[in-house]
Length: 427
Image (cartoon, rainbow, N blue to C red; front, side):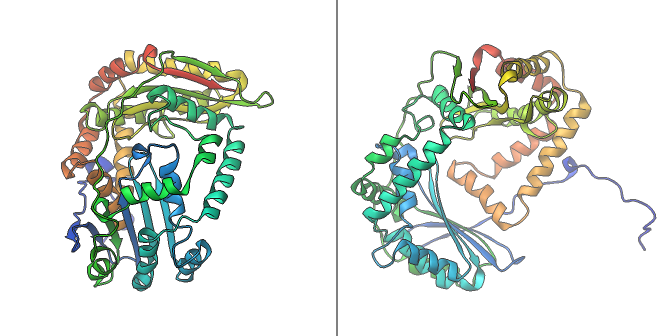
């Protein structure tokens, strides 16, 4: 019998043996790969169609995101309102997203309604009409949203720092504009759709408590024909042209009370051996609420409500980006404190107690991220779309558990040099 007067032993997160639940792989009749993670916990399904149709592949600005958005806004049989009403009738959520490399259409629904909702998803993906009036509404709404956002210092800062890092003509640095929205034409959207949204470019990721006949259903709606032709997308090579100048100050709102601070530098992508090591160092530096940047600039100095450092996970290249919003009168002081924390990491080894805390935080976060089939399929999707396998996942876990304070100090000395960073303050 359990002695309930005695507390159980505490087990650190780093002591857990983390495994990534495997997926099942099926091929539809036309060759579309289907990656499946099953779970019987809840009567829900997540189905995601992924295409290489992000901004990387567009030749006209904003065509990729506009195409992705407007595919749902009317087909040859139904209007945008009717499409939304059909999905909502079953309590489903049909969403779309466009990123730099890929674009997605995602369906969340109850298991029992999957068969009724797949025809709606098929119609949206295979038969979009791109009505002129929907494009006009989209352009008008986005221009209004852009006009509002351009008054916000943090929005302006995000646009500019990416331009400095990657170049204004690179997909990672290209930004929206009023002129680009006005230039959108339905013919361009249809042409982009035909090139990129076809069976040869499609991958399907599905998770949850799946109907027993899910593969026959997917075959019926997405695997039975060579829809939209056989054009297979080849990823073009695009040069990165960063800004030559490193320090920028932009005056955006003369009546504002706070400014946006960005400090960023290029960094190798996830295929570089230093990337998983840098994830640990970045977490210590500014990657969680107990980080050094938060302890200093928020808790001690009171300059900001929050400051964060992140590593971009882009495919071609990455970057380290420290971002915060602070009072106008302390923006320059915030910069000074960020560099002080960089110097500390270069000159002093991280105490074992702090390193142990961060190890447990990172492993605990990963354990949380693997809680459920939806989270597991997302982890697999990121690996598969970046041509990585399970070994990459396990190597990252091993790095978190075994990296030493000396290795982290050496990493800081290599990558936390002030002269390598772009500085931007927008007030």
